[in-house]
Image (cartoon, rainbow, N blue to C red):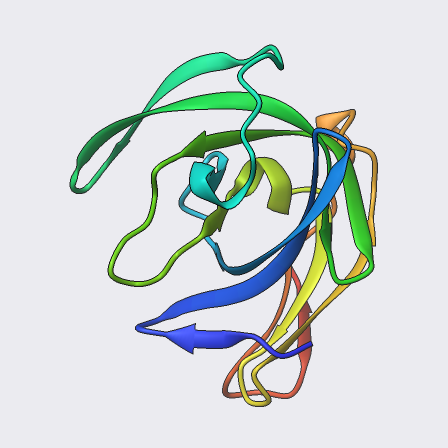
Length: 151
């Protein structure tokens, strides 16, 4: 699948399973610097009756309150992760970011990025438990065609 790079950010689409429905969400960034996964609350019919946790996110431009809820699944390409905690908040900004895919999600994927061809591949997923079995993030370098495993 092709990814879009804009100002150094990598954008990919996901499918979100929430409140018994599936939603296609484009323009989600891969963010290894974000601990959590955040989706803009205006993209789905948010259900406040689903149990959640009120959290405060801190970033370069201040803070924001979000509600974290467990979703049925997040699917990237053919990899589906179930029962993932997602933070819902108002994250629209000038970059057009609709979602942030943080390390709470990325740690459970084997993900290839090929910067030369601007594509990615999510090869497989595993159950999010236990933590110690999280696979490596795999990156194909811009300067080399060799694949490197990070363990």
